[in-house]
Length: 209
Image (cartoon, rainbow, N blue to C red; front, side, top):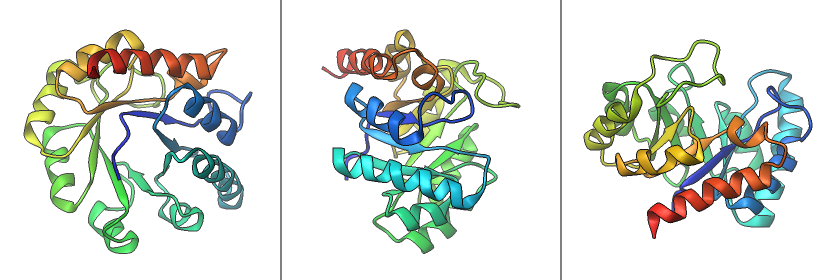
């Protein structure tokens, strides 16, 4: 499976206008080629319902779905894999549970974390925060484009730039060596999530062509 370059994270914390599934559909129609289901709070049963609905949209659209944090939800919905943070399930243990074909992404805020994640079997690194973000209560120190470039040189797997990515910042992070970008509030909190996603897609395509 080819890893998507425009990852859109669904959200029901910063906005409540759209369900996860609705956001996935809008983002995919706007050009997202990977959806990450992300819901930190709430009951597992409720998360499963929302994740299953999102998985159905992704299957219909033939777009990769990853589940943030929850290996059980990924297995229950036949998602392609998971994205794991530093305090989540260890990458190597997740690999043993999900198998060699699963896509496993790992968040890293330092070069050493990125290298370790690759050694443990991650398929890609989500590195950041590259820029300031309001999506986390206590984000790690902003790394900037130079920090991103350092990590891209240190690992052989794709690096996805995360945090504070705007369409105008797509070109600089890609030029620093990123394989792609991950976006949440830059899409989900906009009046028109599909149009917002399209702006990111256009910015990416300009760099890639």
